[in-house]
Every structure is written in C-alpha cells, then in structure tokens.
Image 1 (spheres, rainbow, N blue to C red):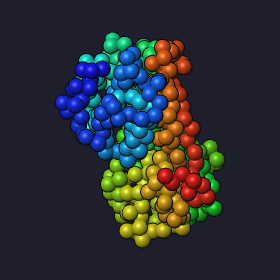
Image 2 (image 1 turned 90 degrees about the vertical axis):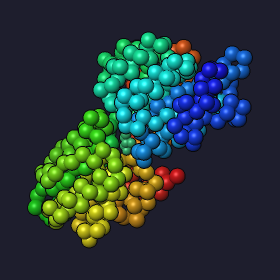
Image 3 (image 1 turned 30 degrees about the vertical axis):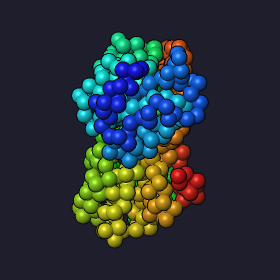
Amino acid sequence: MKRFLAMMLAGTMCLSMAACAKPADSGTGDSGAAGGEGGEKKTVGVCIYKFDDAFMTTYRNALQSMLEEKGYEVSVVDGNNDQAKQTEQINTFITQGVDALIINPVMTSAADTIISAVKDADIPTVLINREPTAEQMAAYDKLVYVGCDAAQSGTFQGELILDTENKGDINGDGKVSYIMIQGDPENIDAKLRTEYSVKALTDAGMEVEQLDLQRGDWDRNKGQEIAQNDLAKFGDQIEVVFCNNDDMAIGALQAIQAANRTVNKDIYLVGVDALDAALNEVVAGNMTGTVLNDAQGQATQAVASMEELLGGKTFAEGEQSVYVDYVKVTPENAKDYIK
Ligand code: GAL
C-alpha cells in the first residue's frame, strides 16, 4: 500500500491528474470498509478502456467518487483503446500490490489473458461493461462481471419504434427501412443491440429492410459521417436510424437536421445510454427515444461486488455475472433521468 502510494505520488501511473486519487488523508465518509490494518486505506486500481468515451466517462466518474467516498485509495487509468497498453497497466497495478481491481477491458478477446494475470496474483477483480463468457470467468472464483443484458437494450429500441403511430413504416410501403449505426462490432453490446432492435420489429410482424450497416465505434463524429453519407445516398427511403449508443445518435441527429429531415415526422432516431445531451433531445422531440444504461447503478453494483470479494466471498461458475436493468426512455419519462 505504501509502495502504491509512493509510486502514484511520483506520477508514474497517473496519466491525468484529474483521474488520480486524492491524497490518503483527504478521504471522507465511511472508511471502515475500506480501512486496512492499522487504518491504512485499501487500494483499488480502475482500468477504463478509453477515457474519450461519453458513457464510460459518466461511469468512471461515478465509480471514482463512490470508491473515494467509501475511503478507498483509487487510481483510474486510461487504456487509450489499446489492449497492450491496458495489459501493461494491469501488470503495473499487480506489481504495486493493489487490494482490488475494476477492469473495463479494451478487447473482450483479451479476457483470458486478463483473468489469468489477476488469478496468478490472487487479486479480487470486477470486470465491467464488456462481458466475457461464463466459461472464461469460471477460471477464477474471485472474479465477478457487472454489466447489463445488452439484448434487452436492443429490444427496447425496437419497441420505441413499434410505439410510434406507424410502427416505423412512415411511407406506408409495408416495410420499415432502416440504417444501423453500430458500435465496435467486437463488443457484445454492439452485436446484441444490432440484432435485438430489429428482432423486436420482426417479432411484432413487421417487415424490415436494412439499407446500410456501418461501424461507428461508439463515436459521435463517426455517427454524423455515416448518417450524412446514408442520407445523401438513400434520402427519403430511410425511415429509421438505429444507433447502438447515444453519442452516435447525437452525431446522426446533426446530419439529419443538416439534410432538412425532421425526427418523429419523416424519420425516427433511437440510441442507448441516456446521456444528458440525448435526454434533452428526446424531451425536445429531436430523438424518438433512448434507453437508460444505468452508470450509477452499475457503479454501485461494481463497488458492492468488489466489497464482497474483499470480504472473502468466492463465486462459482454461473454466479459470476450481475446485471443491472435497462430502462426505456420516451419524452414522457426522459426528464426524470437528466442529471
Ligand atoms: C456501451 C455503451 C457505449 C460505450 C460502450 C463501451 O455499454 O452503450 O456508449 O460506452 O459501452 O464499451
């Protein structure tokens, strides 16, 4: 713990001062759970896949303040969307002897490497946001995954379209013509949202036509570019713009407005996350709806799972995933979620 602190103060791992923990003596709140022997604080290393991600920014800020309020010594690091870099950061935390790790993997495919490293070091670990398979997690019983059931968010997106007056078939030609702006396709959230949003329509008996599917990597600018190109190419044929997240939907909205199209009149637009910016657009009628990806709830659960692990609890295969519910967000309830 002292070594951890010394290294942190030396700035060897604090990539951004804002992301670093407060000094040991500035903790507030209940330090009981976090206090180690002799009153020393327990240390937690938090690895985020990249800081430049709108949803993960809300999530990591929630995590950091919850952990600090509980009296933990926290260090949050930016993986810069580079798995090799994140693996190094995890190894550094291990060398420093942190008490627990919370990891948002860069690549789900790196789960085996990450799990074997934390297992060898015997460090209780909570994986967040990018779900490995149950078999991968079963390799280590001091490991929990906290996230959401991505299929549910896709289903809610489809239902938001089904709830419109023409069920997404604006031109009445008997089919819903859509474009899909996908997140990072390696990510299960992107895969399942893409699949289940459309499945909700077909399950309800609607015919669908996919005009285009492009990866936007969760990024606003890419969402804007993809929508702009598709609007130029397909014009009025596009009835629905499905975006795997809100940041891309906000980008798509800029393109929709620039093309003089009007959301909820001649085109529908849905996202996921319930970022404040998107909630404001839903209230204003510029987005058809979104789905709350509950950062606060997931951070609370991640900390609770970490504390169970720190208390000595182990988890058997099949019991290692904890899911927080998504919530469908419409103009009626959007205001309730603005922070
Ligand atoms: C998703 C979220 C996206 C992005 C992604 C990162 O759950 O909806 O906006 O943050 O996680 O893995």
